[in-house]
View 1: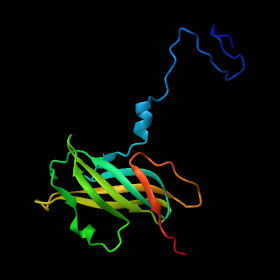
View 2: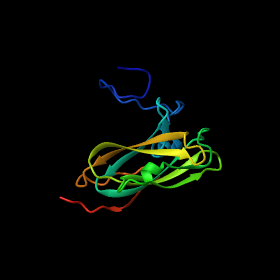
View 3: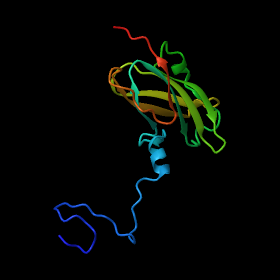
View 4: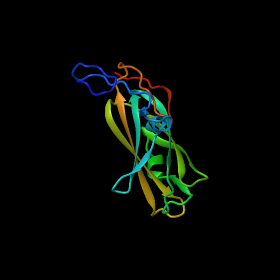
Length: 166
């Protein structure tokens, strides 16, 4: 299999680039970093999906993500009162702050309890106009606590281990 280039002659051979050929660059540093950052994706139903990656069961995490500017919410955003009154929520927002460039930064606390793909939901609303709200679904893949330590995305921090009841 002669091609006029420096290469292996075996089937399915390896190609060595000539000095004058462009060397393709793998993912840039920005793209690799973007894969590790939490993004809030707008769903067709108007809710935002926040994928936080792999977590470990029976651990507590602080999760930080940003939502874009949502005109109906404005800057006076708070957590739904119904969620604040839940006895022991697995997911709760601890801080919601406006960002200078628009949108809000949400800091949550999440306690992982079961393995598998899990989804928890928060409802954010405008303090002065209770009729305008947005749902945020947090999705994680929770692995058994005996199967290693997951590599956490940027914005996810393990706060500690929860007591495991048998």
